Image 1 (cartoon, rainbow, N blue to C red):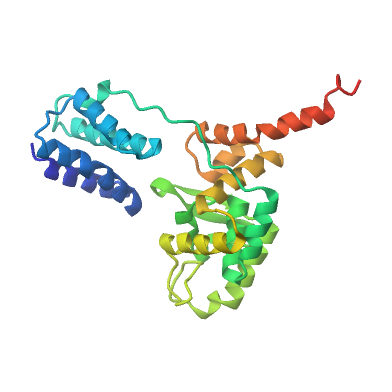
Image 2: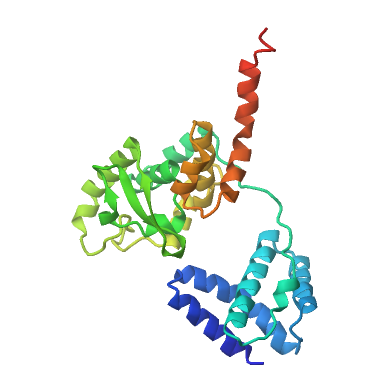
Length: 284
C-alpha cells in the first residue's frame, strides 16, 4: 500500500479544488501521523484500526476537537480514495464520529471589550479590533481583506471566506470611520500591496502577525483574547442586541445554522433576565 502516493494525490485534489493553503496544510498535518502508523506498524485498513487510532490519539492528552478533526480528515481522505476507485470499500463508513462537547469560547463582557479596545492604542490596531467586533471576521479574512473590497459608500466589505466563498458583510459607522482614519494616514503611502492591513515594515499582515498582536494586546489589557474569541463575542452580542440568527449566519459565513444555534444558546441568559423584568404574572 503506497500511502505516500495516496496522500500526494489527495492533497493535489484539494489544491485543484482551490482549497485554501491553510486548509490543505490542516489535512496534511492530520493525515501524516495516521498514515505513518499504517505503514510503520503494517496495520490493515479496517474500522477497528481507525477506532484504535482515535482512542490512542484521545489518550495522548489532546483536546476532543483535535480527535474530531483527525476523524474528519480520515473520513474525507477515504471518501476520496473510494471515489477515485483506489479502494473498493470505505473503512470509515462504519466508524461513527467521536462526540464533541458542546462548548463555546466564553465571549468578552462589555467591560472587557472596552478594556481590550483601549489597549489597542495604535490606529491600525484600533481599526482591526473595531472591525472584528463589528463583523466577527475570521483572522484569515481580516488579513486577506483588500482595499478594493471595502465599499465605504455602501457600508460593506466583500469577504473571501472558507472554500473561496465570497460574501458581503455590513460595516457600521464606527468601523468605517476607524478604517478611513487608518487608510488615510498610513495606507495611501504604500500602493505596492492591496491588503488593507500592513505591518510596520509595509508588508501585508499575515495570520501569525495577527496572533502576536492579540497576545500583546491581551497582556496590555490584562485579559485573554484571541481573534476567534472576538468572533464569538460579536456573534453573542449581535443576538443579544436584537439580531436574528439567519442574518448572523450570513454575516459569519456559516454554511449551516448549527454553529449559530450555539451562539443563540449563549445569549439565552438575556432571555431569562428579560423574562424576570417583564413577566406579566410576576408583575401582577
